[in-house]
Length: 285
Image 1: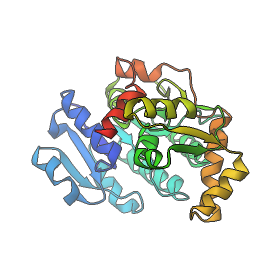
Image 2: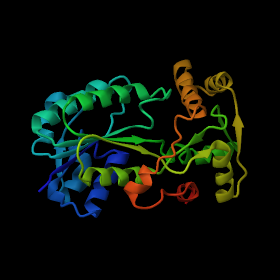
Image 3: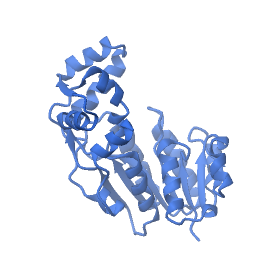
C-alpha cells in the first residue's frame, strides 16, 4: 500500500490533482490532502480522504501532516519571497517522515530563464536535490487560464496589450497540468526525473485570433515595448513595482522562456494537451 499526499489540496490545482488521483483508482483512504484549513476540505473527508492540517509557514504542523506518506506532491507556495523557506520546511518534514519521492511543481526552463518568478523555483529545486530524496520536477509552463480568465476584459477592450512581441507561450489548461501531476506522482522510477511541461505554443496574435474566432468578437494584439507597457500598466493603476514585474514577464516571453518543444506533457497525459480554442470556448460558456 502506497500513501500519497498532495499539499495545497484545496487550491485550484491541488483539488484537481486530488480528483484526478481518485478517478485513477487511488483509494481515498490512501490519499492525504494537506491543507491549511481542514474545513475547506470537508467534502473530501466525507469521501474518505485523509484531510490533515499542514501550513508551509508553520513547520511544526508539517511532520504530522506527512506521517506515513510515501509519495508527496509539493505544490509550490504562492507567497513571493517566502517560497524557499516554506518549501524547505516541507522537504525537512518529508525527510523526517521517510517520504520516498517528492514531486514538485516548478517553472518551465528553470535551469535557464529570465522569468522573474524563476529564482525561488531554482533555489527550491536545489533544496530538493540536496535532500537525498528522489525528486520529480514538474517544470510547468503557464496556465492557459492566465489569459482566458481575462476574456471579458479582452472582449470589452477589443485588444490584448503586452510586450511579448512575437514570443510564444507553451500554455496548457490547469486540468492538463493536474492530470500530468497525478500521472507523475503515480509513476515508478529511479533517481531524479525532470519534465518540461507545456502545450502547443501560441503567440499573442494567435491568441487574439483564436478569441475572435470562438467568440465572434474582433480582438487584436497591440504590441508595446517593455518600457511603454510598464508605463501603460501604471496608467491603469498598478504600482511601479507590480508594473515592472508584469512587464518583465512579457520580456521573458519575448525571449522564449515560456516556449518549449518538449512533448513531456502529452506523454504524461497519454493524449494531446487541450487545444487553446477549447479552453476559450469553455471559459466563454
